[in-house]
Each structure stands twice: as C-alpha cells, then as structure tokens.
Length: 446
Ligand SMILES: NC(=O)c1ccc[n+]([C@@H]2O[C@H](COP(=O)([O-])OP(=O)(O)OC[C@H]3O[C@@H](n4cnc5c(N)ncnc54)[C@H](O)[C@@H]3O)[C@@H](O)[C@H]2O)c1
Image (cartoon, rainbow, N blue to C red; front, side, top):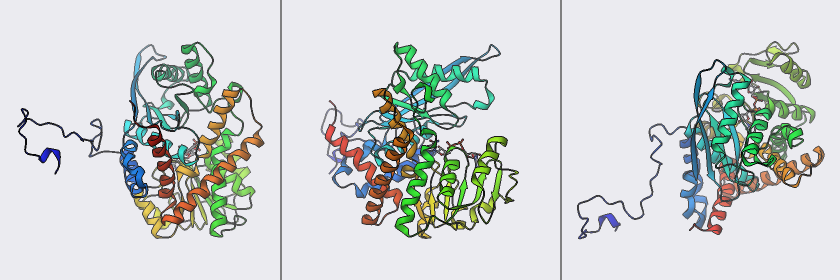
C-alpha cells in the first residue's frame, strides 16, 4: 500500500501532503507537451534502463541535470545601444570528473537543447572513458548579425557570468556550432583576468600558441574514419573501393572524406549548404577541399556532375556519413538510404524513428556518441598537456586517439552482440553503467 493510500488520522488530514518518496518525472521548468531534444534523450535513457542491472536504482540521476545556469549577457553594441542575450551553461553529470562540452552561438538555442547536448556529452565522455562529466553551453545569438567587436563582448561577458561554475577542475568549455579558436582565446583570457592567473586549462580547442593541441582540428574526422574502418573489418566491408557519401564538408566531413579517400575508398557524393556534387568514379577530394576553401562550398566544382539535393539520400553507396546538422536522417530519408553503414559525424543526425527504420532494414549505424568522440578525446589530451605544460607531437596524439577510439568501439560492439541491441543502445549501456557506477561508489552527499 502506498503512503498516500494509508488511512490518515494525522493532524494534517485533508491537506495535500507530498508523498515522502515523491520524485517528479520532469523539472517544473520544462513544458511536458514540448520537451524538445531533452525528450529524445529521456527516451534513449528509458531504452537502456532494463540493461543496467542493480545500477538502475540510480537511473533518475541521469534524467535531471545536476546544475543549469541561465545568465543575462548585456553588451553595448557598436551603435551605442544596449542588447541583452540569453546564455546557458548546463552541467548534466559530474560523477566521473569535471564537466566538458562545447559552447554554441545560435539564435535558436534553448534550455532543453543545451540540457540534451550536455547529457549526450556525459554519455560520449563515459563511452570513450575520458575522466569527464557532461556539460554544454549556449547563447541565443545569430553571430552573422554582429561585428567581431560585439561578439568578443558577448563571449567575454558570458564567460564572466558562468565563471562561477567553470574552471580547469570544474567545467571546461570548448568550441561548438559557430564558435572557434578565437572565441576560446577570449574565454580563456576573460577567465584568467577574473581569477588573476593565466589558466590555459579552462577551455580546449584553443589556438596552438595559447596551449592548444596539435591534431585537434582533424580529431573528430579522424575518429569517424577510425570507427568506420573497425566496423568495416567486423562486417567484411572492404574500405578499398568502398563508395562513400558525405553530408557536410566542413571540419568533420571534410577530414573524414579525405581519410577515406586516402585509404582507397571512392567519395562519390558530397552535399553541403551550397549544393550536392557527384562523380560515379569518385571525386578528387583534395581538389574539392581546395574548392570549398576558395568559394565557401561544393557548388560549381568543375570535376563533378551536379546532383539534386534530394537525390543525395538515395545515392548508390556503401558508407554514408552525415556530418552537418541534426535530424537529417528521418522518416522521409531513412527508407531511401542504400548504404550498409551510417557513421554519425554530426550530433543527433538520426531521429529515433529513423533509427528504428534503419535497424529494421539492416543498416548498421555507428552512433554519434561514439563515432564523433574523437574531438573530445583530443580535447582531453589538450587539457592534460596544459596541466603538465608539456606538449606532445602530432604523431603521438594521433596514435593515442586511434587506440582510444578502437578500444572504445570494440567494447561497445561486444555489448551490442551480447544483448542483441543496436550500437546506440550498446553505447548508452556502457556509458550509463560507468556513470552510475561512479555515482554509487561516491554515494550521496551529505
Ligand atoms: N568539430 C568537432 O570537433 C565536432 C565534434 C563532435 C561533433 N561535431 C558535429 O559535427 C557536425 C559538423 O560540425 P563541423 O565542426 O564539421 O562544422 P563545420 O561548420 O565545419 O561544417 C558544417 C558543414 O555542414 C554543412 N551544412 C550546413 N547546413 C547544411 C545543410 N542544410 N545541408 C547540407 N549541409 C549543410 C556546411 O556547408 C558545412 O560543410 C555538427 O553537428 C557538430 O555538432 C563536431
């Protein structure tokens, strides 16, 4: 019998008293009708709970962020008026170490989105076993509408406002959508000025001259390539001659495409925000990268045939790499995909519905939470190098990155085989178990 159903003879009879074990399913600041990305994350946690054994007792800890900070970011614009921006920093879980996760500048950032991205960082960091919790930040701003001077003020004021909760041993931001090395340099400088000592380890993804790491720029694409090669070995797909299609030809997609081409694969189709290019015999990836650098996109690349943007999803290929935006593989595009393997370079490119469609069609999906973890892995190396003030060669960095990605991928693969689940669910099983094991060992404070 539940406590609330017990006949009540107490002096409080008739008054509404919360049951002693009350645990609200959702924080009051979320709208249950419009949960947004946080809702997707909660579904993913529910999927793994049956596999967590005795640790399932702690699962609620994953369903609520540890700490969410919303800050006002006021700046004086170049024209003398004052503008206010909304900023967030969410620390989802810190059981395994300090928070780690990027900061994005985007006009559509919401608290729900930052919460979900922070949670996915907890999963990703635990999946590759780097000693971090998960965090994420964002500012609701369209950076294209503002000058460099204004963006610098925004970055600096935001850093000051979240300075209460970040720090080299507390929470370490990094670049994400629309933020880069320059923003990290401003953030590092602001934090250092406020604390009175140069603290290179407060952010990663910094310029090399400020304690950044060699190999960081290419790290995510290299990780995508590494897990792709391992999965190809396990499934009997030859990389040499394999047909590859890439959506997004920026940092992640460009590097992954280049590495696949160097390994003998044929990059047959590439799509970015300017258009889609195709060549049945394989595109010249180096020439395409140079074209993108010169013109800003793949459109009008001379040594290719044009292809309709929609046709991209049905292109004849073995490996498809979404490396652009969220939600690209959905109920409309998933049924048309001809690849036998999808490697998620982007964060959240596949909707849960599309995930099920691909699983039922036998398409192997290497999920973002493991496939694009190369970036945070080299961010971890950057942080370690900053602490020791001793910097490694690019060769050492790449070797260590490949080893971590290979080991993590094989661990997840074995769990997937054992439980007969998708690699996404397997990655969540591995990661959630690690996080909750740490939670249990630490115990509840006080
Ligand atoms: N850079 C990293 O270290 C890193 C790490 C983990 C995950 N990611 C994720 O990878 C994805 C790509 O990040 P990036 O760093 O390569 O960004 P980027 O800005 O370097 O490149 C983005 C690419 O996406 C393309 N794109 C944008 N809109 C598009 C559209 N509507 N249709 C097709 N293509 C479009 C752009 O043209 C560009 O080629 C993002 O989801 C990001 O969160 C990046």
